[in-house]
Image (cartoon, rainbow, N blue to C red):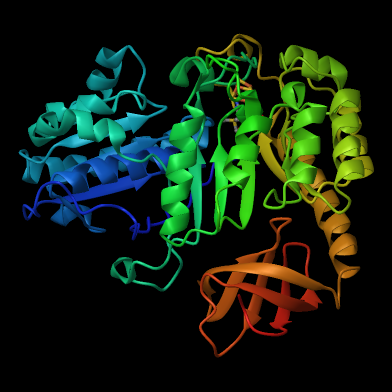
Length: 462
Ligand code: SAM
Ligand code: SF4
């Protein structure tokens, strides 16, 4: 899951039952950075607080409780969290009774160290342990059983619509498996999120049913290793089984999942994607490096050939399927020749999207014990080289689609134009005087760029 640093407000969900407790005049403020899993966790915290009468505020100085949801996948993210925490010290001095809470991947089991560093924080809680919130919000204790039933999903709010509109949730992100059983040598996630734990299939299907009943048309299933889903459940449904069950929910138009691990990307999952009408023609399969020796030291457990072959099989089963991947440049010891292997693989496979990251040592991981020996300037050069490659590949590929008509699910407006995505997860903007929010609209592409399409609606939306 690529970390995103944008803070997107969450949409209320029209299908959600009214809160158990009446509004109590108190307000909460939540700040989130990181991947979609963090967004989903923040949505759960918001749902818990709303259940006991709190209301959301976008102004931290106006809040009765402030919750920060942190990411430490890279140093830059950790620095942002530390900056935000430090900036709240003054507010906390002025309003000492206001609980300040930190959750997310910055929270370790050695909380004394965090307490020393940020003494003004009242509660640190592990993202898997929502019950700890009772420490500062005692009202939650009376609702314990009901809180377990609260949904766990994240629905981004379309731009320009007030949260009261109750009609903005067109897409939703639903966690299906928590944690990770791999130990990639650079990655902090398994230390902070624990072992893989799948949610029961029936619980996920019920949640999707509620979302669809409330107007959601596209669901993305989430997990760090989403395609490992179900191996820890008694009847081992597997991701393919879950995809079938979710596809059968009447009214669901589009189904996606991320992030997959190449090791678990089985023929069965790919064939199931190809067969099910709602499964979108989009594959998110991080490669991280294109050199076998670097992959071995990253402890990724596959070869460049395996990744290439899985993409080839996917494209064979689903012609036109778009591909996204993640790559780290400047891993310890990565030579120029090894980087060239990554470059050549990406040029050959020609992905539609590459999430690029410069290696950042994470204390506690295996690779943090190795010398971070690729100089920053060289990491930057490799990053820029891959960025330029992607721009060239996507410019050429997208230009060939001029004049094509694509199906767009309209998620909101950006700079006055309707904005949505194709089934292949490509951004499309178009002008239309009619209200298109939440509609599937056929759009003819009139302009292309490496990052998005511009087009015009042909025919009515549905
Ligand atoms: N589970 C996914 C996988 O197996 O690829 C990725 C999860 S990771 C939280 C999200 C992305 O952050 C990774 O794909 C990787 O590119 C990047 N990342 C993780 N650790 C990193 C590090 N130490 N330095 C730079 N980038 C890192
Ligand atoms: Fe991190 Fe590797 Fe697990 Fe992905 S598979 S979350 S990169 S340890």
